Image 1 (cartoon, helix red, strand yellow):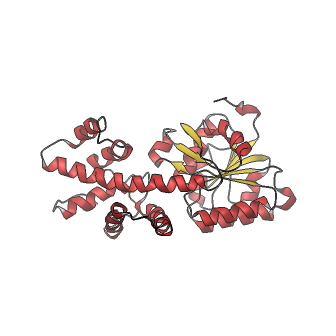
Image 2 (cartoon, helix red, strand yellow):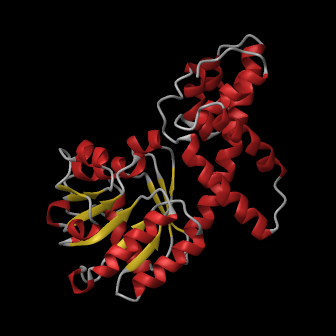
Image 3 (cartoon, one colour):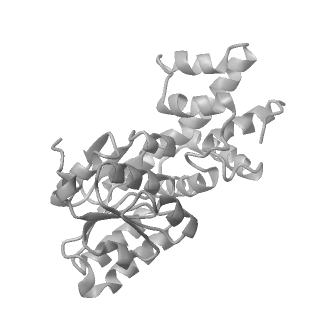
Amino acid sequence: MTRIAVKSHPALAVIGLGIMGSAMAGHLAKAGVRVNGVDVDMTARRRMARLLESVEALVSNALVGCKIAITSLPSVGALDAVVEQIIAMGKQCPKGLVVMETSTLPLTNKLQARDELAAVGVTLLDCPLSGTGAQAKKKDLAIYASGDKKAIGRIRGLCQHFSRVVYDVGVFGNGTQMKLVANLLVALHNVSTAEALLFGQRLGLDQMQMVNVLSDGAGGSRMLSVRGPVMATRTWQDAAMKVGVWQKDMQIIGDALKDAQVPAPLFAASVPIYLAAMAQGHALHDTAAVYAVLARMAGEDVPQ
């Protein structure tokens, strides 16, 4: 992959400075890219102010002088608001702007955003991220890029600063479709990791040793490697993916499975576990808290 000359690259806007957005913006800034951050939350802006070129509440202020923007957004409403602000810029919108949309949102909404932005000369790419917040901090993200090939070529150099790989998965929307399949596996592997670690503990095995040994075998998974240690140390209060946010992803997957008429008994079985985590007060905790749900079902007293 060809490394870009970051010092000569125009400023870049990162819109949405939550767990994933702040990690991407931070890595880019440390690599020498001039990053303008955007977030409606004052706390998020203050947290990133020292690292970035500028931190704004309005998209229009951050896009001045930018040729590329990255969006990391929590909801369809947030995406719609960003699109409206870009369109409202009119002639002030940078010519040839490419927007790399990394959020996990329904494809119908992304398609609508693509068409609305295309009408004003802005290219939207559908580029969901595979990885947790903890992985984002280590640049251990896979990007499922879809859309205009030339535009994907323009973002590749920048992506190397906050990810390990960029996959061009084809036409616009394939990125989201790939992410839904990936997240279905994440949903299952996360619960199966909790189930396995609880089983092993009841057999008298050390949970951290299980994580290390099993991760190297046929039963290993990225969720065992990434979330297994969180479950073993009961540190789900430090969230890399909040249970409350994950519920949005679960809903999108469920709707897509229904539309595709795909029987998904394992996914269906995992849904009540995540709902129980919400009911037990883990909405702001990492999804590794599903371990606490299973442990309580087994009669154990586990920390909140």
